[in-house]
Structures are given as C-alpha cells and as structure tokens.
Amino acid sequence: MTMEGKIFGTDGVRGRFGEGWLTPERVSALGRAVASVCVSSGTGRALIAHDGRASGPVLEQAIAGGLHQLGVESVSAGLLPTPGLAWLTKTGEYDLGVMISASHNPAADNGVKIFSASGEKLDDETEALVEERLWAESEATGSSIEVPLDESLREAYTSYLRERACPDLDLTGMRIVIDCANGAGSYVAPAALEGLGATVTALHCAPDGENINSGCGSTHPEDLQAAVRAGGSHDLGVALDGDGDRCILVDEHGALVHGDGIMTVLARWRMANLPYADPRIVATVMSNRGLHRALREVGVGVLTVGVGDRQVVEALKAEGLDLGGEQSGHIIFGEENSYIGDGTYTALRVLRVLRSESAPLSSLASPYQEFPQILLNVAVDSKPPLEGLDTINERAAAHEEELGEDGRVLLRYSGTEPVLRVMVEGPDESRIQEMAHDLADLVVKELGA
Image (tube, rainbow, N blue to C red):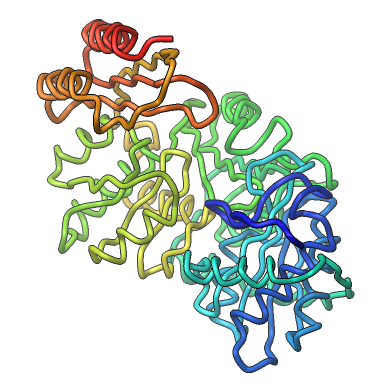
C-alpha cells in the first residue's frame, strides 16, 4: 500500500463494507498491524464480537486471519454489545479485544474498534503506530479463518449486568418495552431485564443482517414511544443503538428522555442519597444548558469537554469524577464500570432510581427543561481562524455575558461547506433569535459570500 493518511477515526475504523479500509483484505492487514503493535510476546489471545450486520462474521474472520499470521489466536463472543466486549476483554485473559460494528450507522456500513487488555480503546499514540505498520505493507493481502464461538461469554456478561450492575435490584412488577435496534444487544438486554423480574416487551430484537438501525433504536425511537403509549401501563421504554453502548429512554407517557435527562436523574439522585466527594459531572458541548440549570439547583456542577466519549472518559479520569456522558445517550460511570459506556447498564441504573424513589420517570426527569436553541448557517467566502475575528468574537462575548450561566454562543465552521454556523441557546427564545440574527448579520458583513 503506497497511500498515507489517517485510518482511524474518532471511534475506530469505519466506512462502507467492501470499500476503503473495510474490505476483508485490508481488515486482515489491520489484524496483522494490531498484533505487531499490541501483543509484544508474539503470541496472544484476542476476543472478537460483532453486531447484527451481515458483514460482521466476514470481517471477524478476516481480522482473525491477520491476527493468526502473527501468532495471536482468537475466540468469538458472537453477537454482543461493544461494552460487553470491553468488559470481557478486561476481566478475561485476553491481550486485546476487537469489536466489529458501525454503531448507529446503516447496515451497509461497518467498522472495527480495537480495545487493549484493560478494556479501553487504543490511545492516539498506539493508533498512530498501527497506521504506520499498515502503510509500511507493500500490499493489503490477507487470509480469513474460522473463529471458534464461546457461547458462555455472552451469558457471563448478562450475569454481570443482572448481579453486579445494581446489586439487589428487583424489577418484579415493572413493565418495560425495549428496542434493541436489531443490533448487538438483541439478546443480552431483554435477558438482563427479565432476569431481574421485569415483564419485557421486546421490539426490533431480531437481527437479520440488514435491519440494524433501520427505523428503530436510539436514533429512531418512534416505534418505542408508540408501544409505551399503547400499552397503557408501561413504566418506561429503553432504546439502544446498534452496538449497545447508547441508551435513550421513554417515560411512562411516551416522552423522550435523552442523555441530558438521564444525567439529570442520576446526578440529582446521587447527590441526595450518596453525595459526591466532588460534586461535578462531565458533559460535552452538545449538552443543553438546561442540564446545567437542573444540576446547579442541587449543587452539582458540569465540566464541559469536546464531543466524543473519549474526551468524556479522559476528563473523568483526570478529575477523579464518577459520571459523565453525551446527549446522544452514551453515559459513562467512571471506575465503578471501568469507564465503559453501556446502554443496558445505564438503563438499570435509572431503574434503580425509579425503585428507590417509587416515582415515575416523568417526575424524576422533570427538573431538566431543555432551553431553546437557534442555529443559523451563514455562507462565507473564506474561513479565516475564528480566534482572529475580533469584531465577531467581541459581539458573541457580549451576548454570552447577557445570557449568563443559562445561555451560550457557539461559532464554528462547517467541515464540508463554506458555512459558518451560529448557535445561540438560552431560556428566552425571542431574545436568542435576536442575538443569533445579529451575529449572522455581522458575519455576512465581515465574511459573507
């Protein structure tokens, strides 16, 4: 291979199956590169799992073939959520873990996520070494091998969720609807809830290779909302994404409770019952200021980081905090769950709060009230560095000062278009409309196409 460039994205290697770095030959080459960088002894063991895509077993065999060429033998956990693969890798005798998944993407896509023996995603430095080895190969040849399936692994992870995620949690009498996006959690999540005594209605839990994330799951919760409303007496609904690390909830009335609402429920309950030593959580710039207000009322602060679960994990570790997450529903529980984002684990933790408080989800989530947000896309004829736009930045700063703690202004260029995005968020919709258009007019004056 003679090209050079970035192979790993923000969450592993991802793309359309059969194209780019997602051909079997290139995934096999990836296996060889990963083995050479991550397994120092020359021999080792890898754990592999996949979500519900038809291409999953194909890529599983391809990367196992590449690993085998450098002395690393593989075992498969089969259809399993990404957090299950991470937990099993950490707690088992494995040198690395490999998840074949493209998360919430369509069925035609796929991806490869690599985990170290500690169950953590590879850091940037290690990914760069793997890329260097890949580019050093003259051609992307590879071999595929059958991977032995260990069916006990999925049950071990399910037992962990039932017995250790929330010890003594009894869901007897609760009625729950769960939508597994025809993905990796299609067996584990319903089994964990039923094993704790809940009466479970399962939606989209029958992956056929082509139906993953198709009109279902955390990105399309409409069926889940309808099922909860139609049931009349359901306690809540749970929607996972394709690889099971995200969780979106639906309250007993069918209203959505996304990641900001989930963090509100968890952090407020924790502050009232087991106060944090450091009363802060981690959220990304995508979280609404309504989260900040709902937590500020009970003395919990919000540390804001850039987008991506990696940045959330890094902040949790650096600051010694216990809870963080994204509005998308990727919630992370610090050391107690080994910094692994797990949709089913998240749902169980919220259910523990419902049981403890004997209150419905709608009531527990009600302190979170989403502030209005205005987003304007302004065409520009150039993209000079934002930090150098003094006039625009001064105007934005003045608006932020007026908004105070309950508002914000974000300016950022589109990565693919000649556009500057102007976002203003705050409690007064008419006022933030005025602010957004004021900034947009100034951008047109200074940079307009």
